[in-house]
Image (tube, rainbow, N blue to C red; front, side, top):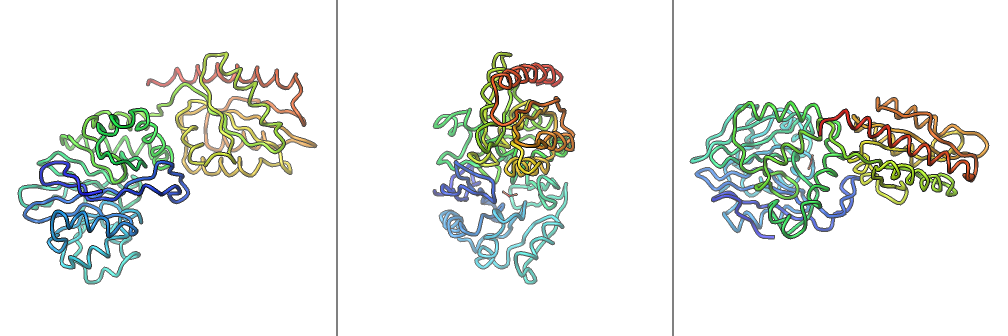
Length: 406
Ligand code: FEO
């Protein structure tokens, strides 16, 4: 797709990756984009680059606006592979350009490229760069989501280039939120925001609050938020900031995600009366079978729900491997503000449900116990106990949810 002018003299020159489905293990059913921006001023400035596979795409987009050799400044907000690996190719075209990057970013850049002949200027929060009619303000956002991360604010145009922050993995011909909502839907956009936040930013809620607070303390007016993935926010800029603050404060829907796996369908059978019990308390519910569902989708369902029930058969006195793997991944995301329970089946001896509870408690999640277990195939009595457990858990979810201001 050709360059798109997002404000007079400022262009999106990125690439749309329609085909990617596995983004370092995070499943992206809607593809993604790698966004970068060209600012045409007295000193032509490129903000960010793209994944190496798309180097020629961004070079072509830049070339439609200007000769790439005319680029004087390159801002590198983040050095993860999807944003920096084409920098070497661009530097071949404009070897005298100056790169502006954080100190930690500069150190990381050495691992990607021989930077000995490059002009590099390290920047920190509050530093500015005059490029002619415009001034750029740099804002470090360390650990959002890497130590090197920063954002760049184009003062005169009130554009915040927010690198991964406020992004979404969505390949679309639409470049802006209002266009996307018109051609697709607001719901699909919000689902992409939740998915991205849950899988990438969940561990950093407190940092997100402080960094947004710091940006607000700078007193800058933000008209457009231009992330490095997905659509650009120009209609609902305030809304996406609020959405992030809400998620950082633990926002969730009053619903339950049942995330389980099953060997011979015994644990699977238990989900049916659980769903009925939860629904009979008026709480919505979704059911995710792990080996049938990418882990990143299960993570998103977990994150959007106030309550989660983990279902696991016992295998050799342990949790089923796919369930153990999911909980291991979830623990790394440091989840908060969710209530959890567990259920499962066993043959000769149990152990999996107990182990699931240990794992949930180690994450410091609120737990509702005891869970419910079934020996071999669930009997009608077992199914009755599952129904009662589902109802009781749903009541707990409602009570727990009431503690959070939405
Ligand atoms: Fe889109 Fe942290 O890379």
